[in-house]
Amino acid sequence: MLDSVRVSLVHDTPPALPDFTQWPSFPFEGEIRLKQLDDPVPVEPPRKGEAHRECTACNAPDDAYIWVGERWRVRAMDRPTGLPMVLILESRSHLDLGDLPNLLAAELGVMTVRLERAIRSLDGVARVHVNRWGDGSAHLHMWFLARPYGRLQLRGTFLSLWDSILPPISEAQWRENLALVAAWLAEFGGRPLAEPSRIQWQAPSSLADQSDAAQRSAEEEAVSVIEAEEEIPLPADGKAADAHDVGQAADEATTGRSASGSDAGSYDAAGSGTDVSAADLRSETASGSPRTDAAASGDARTGDSRASDGR
Image (cartoon, rainbow, N blue to C red; front, side, top):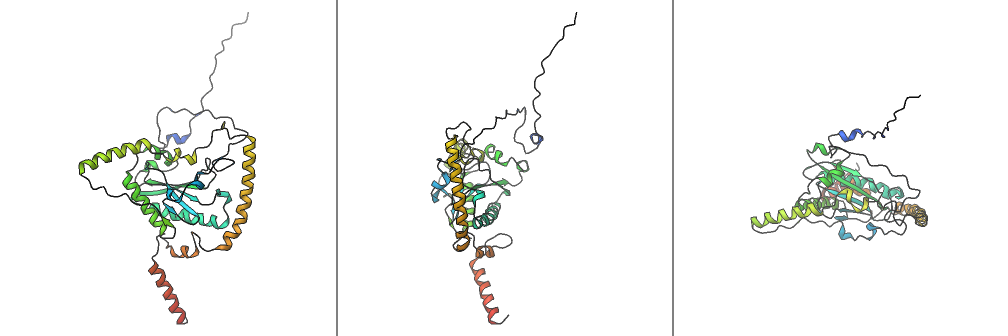
């Protein structure tokens, strides 16, 4: 007679957590479980600005931004968040990163460096992280996140998560920072639209009460980077995810690429009235700070005198 065999069920071993959960910059601790990975979908839903979905950036007026130029605009979040500064650089044209014609592609590099320098010039800012995701919106938008000076735990990959965890900065400081960045950009052209908050001349006791109330309101209503509308993709089972919409999106994408290709010649041929011109590039010093008109005119006079002397 055969001995009975005991069979014990072995549960699936949960996958090991990645090493970054042990990094000092990882914002969570304690027991963490991995989510189950969903099966891939055969057809991805359209982003905002694709197929029949409206584009938020194209419909936004200039007064929703802190600085506007001929082909670029810069905007902030609706209210302060945990980081000293969070800004978004957008193209005016409805183009994604890979659709930019040559001139706009070159301007994107200059605008990225210029905006990074402007944010890094603010008090209390150590570094500026530049990110582009684009899963929620088809309109090009680049994120600029300022890391507070001395906050070494915020270094690296998880800065956008910390933005929604840290308490919001004061609205007065936030508005002042926006105005400083807008003024910096306006030194090279465009129009600044951000203004610092006005001083409220009231008794000290009432100021303290209002400050506490404003802080509570900001903490309740602040929308961080990872919660922004531009970065929330449509669910996989969304109504828009059907073959007709995807086919329409593909047709529009092809048409858009053809249009951007034809625009490239006109952009390159124009060469004037741009947000980033050759004169702008020459007027920026190695440190990135704007040069004054007086200095530029002085250089011109020096050049004229040298020419007259035959040098």
